[in-house]
Image 1 (spheres, rainbow over the protein chains, first blue to last red):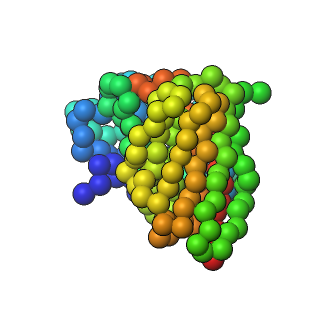
Image 2 (image 1 turned 120 degrees about the horizontal axis):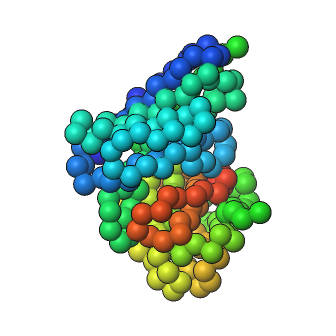
Image 3 (image 1 turned 30 degrees about the vertical axis):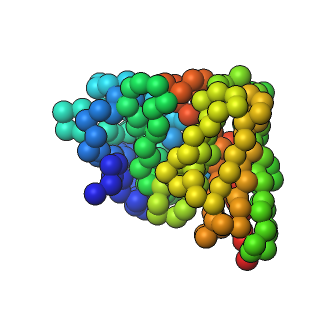
Amino acid sequence: QKEVEQDPGPLSVPEGAIVSLNCTYSNSAFQYFMWYRQYSRKGPELLMYTYSSGNKEDGRFTAQVDKSSKYISLFIRDSQPSDSATYLCAMSETGTASKLTFGTGTRLQVTL
Amino acid sequence: DGGITQSPKYLFRKEGQNVTLSCEQNLNHDAMYWYRQDPGQGLRLIYYSQIVNDFQKGDIAEGYSVSREKKESFPLTVTSAQKNPTAFYLCASRLDSRSSPLHFGNGTRLTVT
């Protein structure tokens, strides 16, 4: 079993829809949670960065962490065609030299 | 603009040749990382460096080598010992190695034939 599981998609939604992207994990020591957006042939771009449980909102994006369920989500409101990309979740433990563990990514397609 | 520059964007090599991928950052970050990305496998850590003149193996270091002689630079050499070198290689950095998020370059696509 992988330490971080992420549905690869593709997920296709119409423009304006609310998108929900999710990751589950098995390591209860993870404390820091990130979401990255990656366009084709580009490097991942940091979207959201959260510590421990709770919600964080930034514009159309909301990140949610539920440590009791070992489940994190990224919500995108009013989705746009420019949101079409692969979304990677990543997480790490606290401490020196903590390495990130990535999900495999969910490909999102927002259609007109 | 601060950022991470990887060059070249595309690289082609013949089997049996060593090749070096460049990574430069002007973010004044202490820690730098090399990842490999293959379809359906996510990002896998090759090597990382928390400080100049020091680096550690990641999960898939075999067939790769690195150096960290300057804070800004962390080149990756893909040697002929790497059995399946064709991949998308990503360099990343972070302010320190504890908890700050990673920032990525735009990658180098290496094709070995």
